[in-house]
Length: 389
Image 1 (cartoon, rainbow, N blue to C red):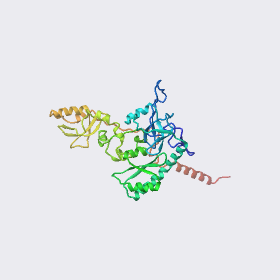
Image 2: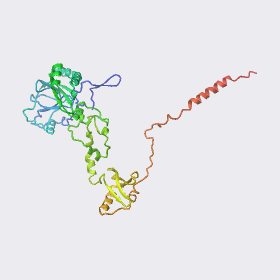
Image 3: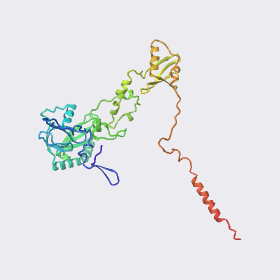
Image 4: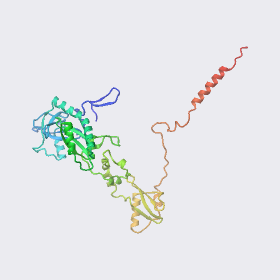
């Protein structure tokens, strides 16, 4: 969701956010939460909730106690408590919804160890913070070069500076355990800051970096998805999807999280549905299930000797044949059940969009030859002798 801070160049191309993602509307942020209680006033005698949610780089959010009773609103830049020094972030949520978010993430808002907000960030704090963020890409590139020289099997995907510039956190992914002690020494010597290495999974990497999925929209993990549930290939099988890893895998290399969205609907529909391995016994021979359409409640069967000829049966018809097979009774054939369902549908393609035919350039144009003939006739007419007598 864009805002008024999104600027456009003279040629119409986007130039990005003027505020570098720190606009007051909080519309450009990842995993943003809409404060639907912002227009409601508290009852008499009630004090506002003294905890706020602060967002740092990408999707990292933490909760802080407003012990100084500062007047904070969404979009304010604040200096927060850190392990050593202070960090700078942006307030993304205030009020009672912070209590709901803390319960959801199992954070104890009565804990005395909850970090505090020091103050609203001054212009000096913001300048140091922006200067550190401008250095992140350069330092990330240099850190990757150092890791390659040390032949470490790891990928440094993101770098995050602390607000005061005294510490940098490097996020990396690796298949196996990595001994990066020498890497930390080399980076601390090259950059002159304290280094912290934090390993993340491939889905967390996609969440931090973001991107556009095959559906054409932003990745779910970087916009609204907060928990990563396990996705198995059985989810694709239940939904009758082809097990193509190139189509089922997301940008993280794992199975797409959206495979679980409609899985419950399919599982409910398959409760009283014959299985994919259903076999029907007829006097003409045994028939195997070839295809299942859950929404139309129909199944396609073919004989063992005729695998190319499919016969469509409804779910009730298949259950009826299975009941007779349980009683060791065979039906005559599938044709007597499927003859009412199989209909030859003639495919008619209409030009509903108003586009021209795709073969319109295949036929040669005749207008040029007609023009040439007209020119020849005119030249011949001019060359004819005239009778002055």
